[in-house]
Length: 372
Ligand SMILES: NC(=O)c1ccc[n+]([C@@H]2O[C@H](COP(=O)([O-])OP(=O)(O)OC[C@H]3O[C@@H](n4cnc5c(N)ncnc54)[C@H](OP(=O)(O)O)[C@@H]3O)[C@@H](O)[C@H]2O)c1
Image (cartoon, rainbow, N blue to C red; front, side):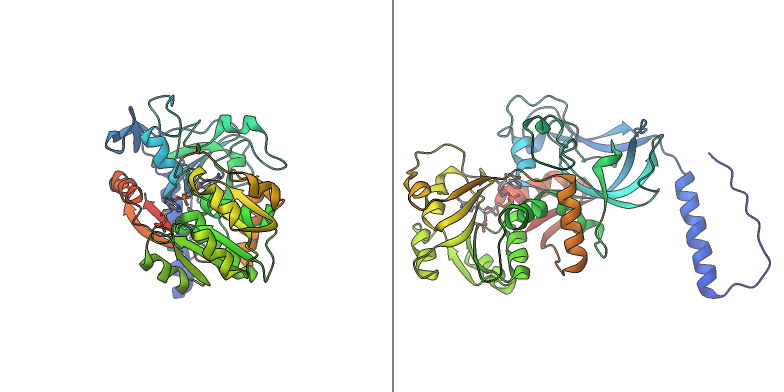
């Protein structure tokens, strides 16, 4: 523990100065505090009920690394697939899950200069994808999948993995940005180039889809959204969606999309569902338009009639989150455009398995968040 010497000038303080001094002293005390053990979730075999919350030693950052005291985790469909074993049946145990989160810097390794103690940050899950085009080897170091995840009170990551949270964002909201928000951003802006007056079709009302809806409305695009629930479609309209289609009741939903777009189709379709709906997505997309393929909820294999990819001269764009630079660009955009992430429900850390069960039920709309 370091010693702190204070020289106190005996001048009367006004209430603002007194408050400021108290806060500074509290912050010095917290920085000086150390604890040896922390809580952490690990998985030793597949299944939500196999998640165990144990004590683990608080890790120390090495050179070029930082420690982050996690404050909020946000769940993605991928976390559920990892925990249940459908993402990678050969996952190595024990595994610490969860890809997305936000927290405050709690220790700095040697040589770290870009962040400061207590700074609020989000974590880029693709540790090696800093900028430029995607490379396949980037899958080797993905937080919560190929390297330990964030379901811990304290985590260690390389300095370049942390990014200051966008101005005005609370930590719970910021935690939703690195995967769901960034994926929507990349589909629409970095790659999709959606413009005012164009039409976005997005499938379902999960995390990515709701971010896509919100971004499209900021851009000035028309939004068609699908859902299994009329209640969720009503809420999506309140968020700005122009049209909603219940894909359970209207199983040939592409026909409705064509009607709504004067027989032309959507300029960009976010295919979040997977192979089962891919053909309908190509039918619902405009000639020369784009299908951003990013999801696998309904699986990756199906017999598909690919004729519309060719006949409509479509671009099928595989999307896999984004780089650190993309997160920074997205953060800059958010600093000047009002977008409040839609959080369906927040659970405490002790109830992380319940949060996963809630997500699995499909009852949510937008994001499910866990506070640490
Ligand atoms: N490639 C990437 O970089 C990337 C990044 C993030 C997510 N993803 C993928 O994108 C998908 C969505 O992820 P998420 O985190 O947003 O999931 P999520 O929050 O769990 O949302 C999933 C939603 O999809 C809808 N859905 C389920 N079955 C559907 C179907 N047959 N057709 C249309 N919609 C269906 C449901 O919406 P309703 O309740 O409204 O029906 C459900 O709530 C997942 O496959 C995930 O792995 C990929």
